[in-house]
Image: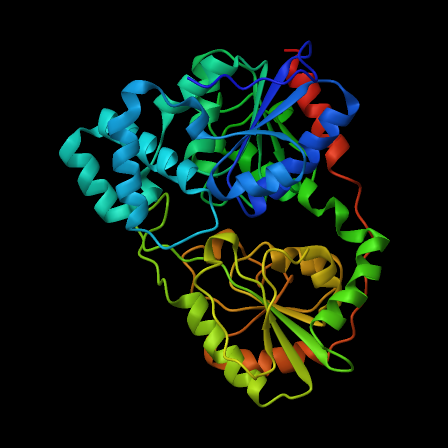
Length: 412
């Protein structure tokens, strides 16, 4: 088994951060970086699939499932490679993806048996994974003094549960509203502390049975940098890159829609993000005064294509999000966290319903966005672009508040 180590910080306690890609790793990285810079612990990031590239780019010590394979895992890795071949291409490391899929599937077989595991995977795909044995293995190898994971229901949930079984203190960081996740995060004993976005989320978890001192309002660290003046300055370059000139910039940030909901019996429409894009492209075709910028989710990088010669342009993951948001005049989402981020800096937001995750991202219901049926999204974007953008007052930074919770929990 690979034994990750670092000469830097080798005498410090190890805090293991566990995160998937997208908004989850974005929430973890600024906290892990600050922990490293303060020298209070050695942050080690178990970055899952698409989270590996941003974690390494942030200069953090990064590991994955592939770093903990054992010789007897060879059949699982071979099966993982087969599973990977049947999935859409992604920007994740194939070696890591094969290890993640193979070990997670082997855990599923251990938990359910061969036939039931096969049926679960046919029905739910990766959403049925709960790799508790593998996370227990990783925690035993790393021996962290603290485990920090976000609210994702697969490996991150398994990390918290494995920490509990091994009596390792743990903290769960909740990115948004925990509408589905409250079923397990709200249970007493799931993580020693929970960091949440706002008081509404805190009260919801208290109603589920958490003790008042276990749930702390910290905000989401991924949003701390939104108000950095450097992003406003960088947005000038983004507009030039988009060849916007005097035209307005409409940003579409799609979210992947799996075939099945990860935690409940509900089918999804995989075509939803593409159908919304088709309507936006048709709208943009009649608005030569607009540039439509499309920023795919990390797991959609290979699935989104745009017609050539039009006024739509791909703003891929290599484009920093914050300057792109500041460069935009209106933003369209289904359930992407980008909608909340845009609203935080005062951008008009349009939300198209129809996702299986609608109740987990109630932007329109909370007044963060204007809701619009897909067929009317063009008219909604027209109205949004006609609004006056008003920058909001920055909130108190989340990173130091989260670190305070981590330090207190690590010393339990």
